[in-house]
Image 1 (cartoon, helix red, strand yellow):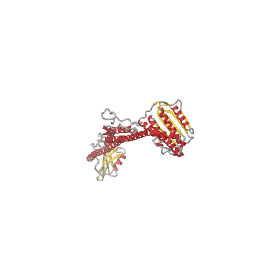
Image 2 (tube, rainbow, N blue to C red; image 1 turned 120 degrees about the vertical axis):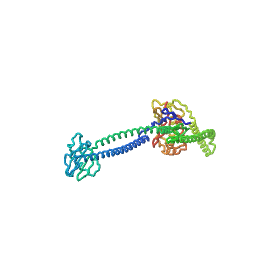
Image 3 (cartoon, one colour; image 1 turned 60 degrees about the vertical axis):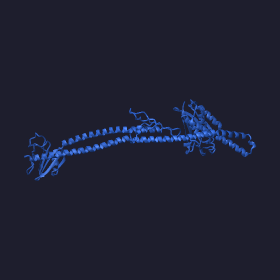
Image 4 (cartoon, rainbow, N blue to C red; image 1 turned 180 degrees about the vertical axis):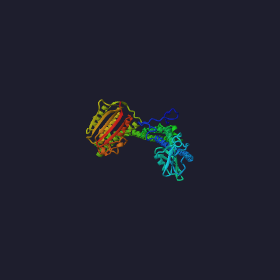
Length: 509
């Protein structure tokens, strides 16, 4: 049955995000390069663009409205000055001082010119007598006189008086110009821009906050799905009985939404994978059971063949030479097949029920005994040990571990030439005991080094002392790996021409 993780955030039915094995920390929803950050950044950019466009359009529209209002005021001021009896807006020749109408707004500029002579004045204060006014500076006057008298409203920036809206017309050979200040309009627009900037920043900040909240809530199911996938990825699926106890919760596997469809598809995939693995395991179990049964049934016939072959050895001087040779080969091959059957039975037991007798084992003593046995079996090799003090103690099955080391030493003896230096050593590494078996032989061919622990893998003639691998069953290293895995340890190999090192790791006592 699928197992679901406990609820998160106090909300029933919503599973907590599974822990991520292997030291992988959950990704922050808005971390660099994440979908959440890209969504937030793009939404903030979109809001910023919209805010800038709206602010610009609003500002331009408001400015046009205010300028039209100033234009109406400008026409009114022109009319008042034109109708003022002392305004100098009629006559044949302009002459200062130019008297201004008292009804003109503060800051109004009036200029009259015939092309050679001109009169100009500015309304500074309503308390100023109407016939005095204030003469305009020459730079400002020249700037105004440069405007075309076409009766159009134009904006002009005067060197000393600032920003103005002006209207100039030509009448009876004279140019008449009236200008109103735009200082208040500019101030209003500046305040409006500041206000719009503040509103835009608030809108961007609010959008980031809202989108961030929505994104984090929306991506939580994906984070939980990633956590579930991480859990599945840490399961050992290559061998043995496999179960997939984790599933995406029903809340995150609702096909009504996009994320739920991903969760539903993931659960469906896990179901198919679990079914396929179960079928594979059932098939492997049948094969292993067949091998175990066949090996067990072969033991008695092989024992009988070996027994009868040994009996004939006593009378081989009484039979023809070719018959004696044939009986010797029968005995030799029967013995080899017996070893193969015993190895297959051992692997079958390791697969089904290792039943190890675990106890504290002095690895120094075990390696000394193993190297002594190897020396007795063949003294043509340079056997050596590298043992620490104090001795390394491991929790292991003494008999099986001795068998593993003996297999590795026999492997070195079979696949390296005489005179090869073979060294066994041990050390403590954290909470693990490490055993190494190294030789300076020709090395393992690269094409098979990744398969040396698989069953019935044999080295080619390059690493076989006799030039043939017929004496090898191809199960020795498979037994090494099976026994080490039964100890909750591991076996590995590193090899290059002139150096091969097998490394065994198992829990220290």
